Structure formats: C-alpha cells, structure tokens
Length: 456
Image (cartoon, one colour):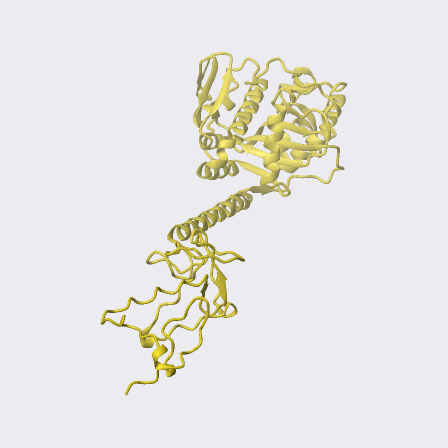
C-alpha cells in the first residue's frame, strides 16, 4: 500500500521558504528517481553556520581569519588554525563518559617555582629524583647556598671566638705580682718596665746569683703630647724608701717589685699605673717565637763574657745572638748606657715583629708567641693581656719618629759617694723639671740626653 504523500516530511525545502503541502498524490515530487529509473543527485550540503559552539558555553563569534572577535559574523576557514580560539572538547573516556569540569574556585593552587614556569603542577615536568615543585638546578643552587651560609657562619664565629679564647688563655698564663702602690694618681698612663737577669734558671752564667734589674724603663703615654720612653740607668744613685740612698737596682734586691715601684715614683713624681718585668734570660725563646729580629750595632764585637760576636752593621739574628746582644757591656765603650740602649732596641724589635698584621692569620705562631711571651713576663695584679697590647703600641710609638727616647739629665757618670762604688748622679736641678715634661707630653720628639742612639 502506497502511503499518502501528504503524511511524509518534505525532502527538499526551497530557499524562499517552506511551501504548502500538495493536496493530491499527483503533486508529490518523488525523491531518488527522475521518473526514468535514474538516481536523482542528493541536494547540496547546507552552508555551515557562521557561529561555532563551545562546550558548556554560548556561541562565540569567529572571524574569517580564525581568530576570536567580539562581534560580527563571517564564514570561518575550512580548517581553523591552531590556537584560533576554538576549545577542543575533552577526550571521551571509558563508558563514553566525560570528565566533570572543575570550577575555578575548586582548583588546587598551582606552585610557581624558579626555573619551573607558571602553571606546572607539583611533580610534572621535574627530572627523576628531584623534589616536586623544584628543578634539579634550583635544588643544587639551594644546597650550595646553604653550605656557603654554614661555612660563612662558622668563619664568623671562629673569627670572634678565637681572639676571645686566645685572650682568655693568655690572661690565664700571665704571672702576676703585687707591685703597685697607693700613691696619688698623676696625668696620663705610666708603665714601669724592668729588665731582670735571673740567674736561677741557669741561662745566664756570670758567677752571680739571684735577680737584678739590669734595665729600668719608664714609658709615659700623656693625655696629650709626645709619648716618651726614658731609660733610668741601673746605677743611678737615688733614695730608696726605708733603705737610705743606694743604686736604684738595689731597690729590687731589697724589696722586689713593690719597692722598685715606690722608688721610681719618689724619683720621678709620677704614679706607676702598670708594672711589667721582662726576664731577659727567656728572651731567646721569645725571639725565636717571632722568627728572629733585626738588630743594629755600629762596631765590631768579640765579647767572651756574653759570647757575642758581631760585625758592624745590621743583621737578622735568632734568639741566642739576641740574648748575647742584650747582655754585652764589657766590650761596650759606654758600658751600662750602651747596654740599656741595646736592650731597648731588642724589646722594640720584638714588638715590631709581634705587631705585624700577617700574624693575625698565623694561629700557631700566635700561640707560640704568647706562650713564650708570658713565660718571660711578670705583671702587676691589675694588668691583663689587653694592657700589655697597649704597652706594646705605646713602646712602638715612643720609638717612632714622633716619640721620645733617651735618658734623664745626668750630672756625673762616675759618681762615688762612698760605700757603693761607681754610680750615676742625676742632675738634681734639671731632673725634676724633665720628669714633669715627660708626664705632660711636653718634650720634643727625638732622642734626649744620650751620647749615642741605637734606633734601628
């Protein structure tokens, strides 16, 4: 039975619009045959719409070049270029189900790491064996930076802890003696330095025993003015509190360091703030600890008592020669005056070597120097290693071009009052004024009251 054509949908709709349905079967146009048994060609494909549809979104206008536009219409190219704004639909998964879209508010935050780029999820694109969110180069840089920070911290702590520990250790090694008096304080800072040859250690073998102050030096740092280093001849005939008049070195024999301090204070009118006693018998080890010293003497010497053999000029010497240099006096044309100057030169040479900046980077040498230095020193109860450092700087300043070195005014170098042999008499009229100038820093820079100069 042939169905009624009017009940069938039209197979072709003219562009001008849909026409009315035919009223009879004779008005129906058959599709698929041309009435002669041939096949009728299919109608042309419908023109594509000027808009495309994204998943879960409204129509997006597309321009003819394939890029998104905000308005207008037009036929898109047959093959849209990559990134033309058309979003690909998600791939189908098993069961022809699609992954649910995640709303922007529910997405997990993405980490942005150095060198990793934005938008990378933790662990994506990272080389094997690296932590999620960090690339291998950044991890290596982090590790190197952490090691460098640790090393720098250790160095800083070491730079602070080492000198602090060294000072504490040195202070513990100092040999203290009750030497200072309760005399009235005077301007500036006054150091009394006594050089003692102790026969008890067996180093010095000249037939005598006990200890003597062969060198007495007064180092004055005034509140303003020139720093002075004045050598008081050990045979100076002076008044010793409680023992009458005698050679000044007898004060040490009578009452040790305390009596020597009181005697110097009475002679100079200056209060002694710090006392330091150098045992010249141990100078050999101290000189060797600093690596030798540079000493000068302008005449040849072959002295059998001190065992010093010297060719005129300046030489770098070790501890044994330096000790003989400081003790020789029988071959010196000025006797004790020359020996005092040579001992002062030796102490200055040791100070120069010990104050070199390169010593800061030689901890082993520092330990040797402190060990040897504290072994030959005795200081008053109030003096510490910092005070000794200040003493060394003042000693260097006094021996510099802006300092003062020399002797007090002398009226007789062979004074014989009786009972003490030959002694040195200080000028009773000039000495008081001289020491007052020393105290106030009023002396002119240079060498004073000395026949020869041993600055080298």
